[in-house]
Amino acid sequence: QKEVEQNSGPLSVPEGAIASLNCTYSDRGSQSFFWYRQYSGKSPELIMFIYSNGDKEDGRFTAQLNKASQYVSLLIRDSQPSDSATYLCAGITIAYSGAGSYQLTFGKGTKLSVIP
Amino acid sequence: KAGVTQTPRYLIKTRGQQVTLSCSPISGHRSVSWYQQTPGQGLQFLFEYFSETQRNKGNFPGRFSGRQFSNSRSEMNVSTLELGDSALYLCASSEVAGPSTDTQYFGPGTRLTVL
Image (cartoon, rainbow over all chains, first blue to last red; front, side):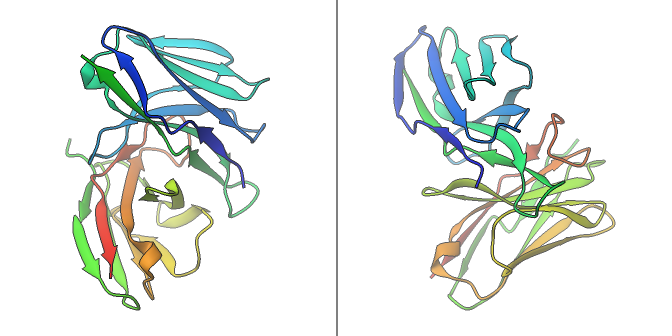
């Protein structure tokens, strides 16, 4: 079973600080990774995706991918209380239905709390 | 555009019963994926339908099945319900067959409780 692993947290950071969320994956064939944010009682929403080694920035969010070490991270700069949510890392892996089939495999999420 | 809609939002069933959940994707989206979310296992992929065909399937027993209609609406059926099937069932739609870097939009989910 291809896995995506995250520290469940909770991760607490003060308002204005940088929050760093990490994710590792076991499938070396995975090429694309996604970060979703899920507020309590709500459905996940896509923050950003990354498929190239290195950094990708979008506003206060920076995703980092290191394929050699098989980890993905998400940095949130100038964290705000509204960023408090569970962050889900996901990668495209081969699906159970076999070769040629793919699925999004999610980590269990890291709960982030931004303290005012 | 209206978002992804799921019905019903809440459902209570007893062991052994069967249940059908419905998902209407965003207009123009032809791919619908279904996920099960539980506190213990997180978000797990069930299957994906695109143009009425099941493309990908996750590691779930045959009690979980689905279908997609010509208008892209999808239904998921769970037969012979077990207590462990209690979960939030989410569907997600996208324009192209997935998964891909095309954004998947999630619906609000159906909360299923099995007693």
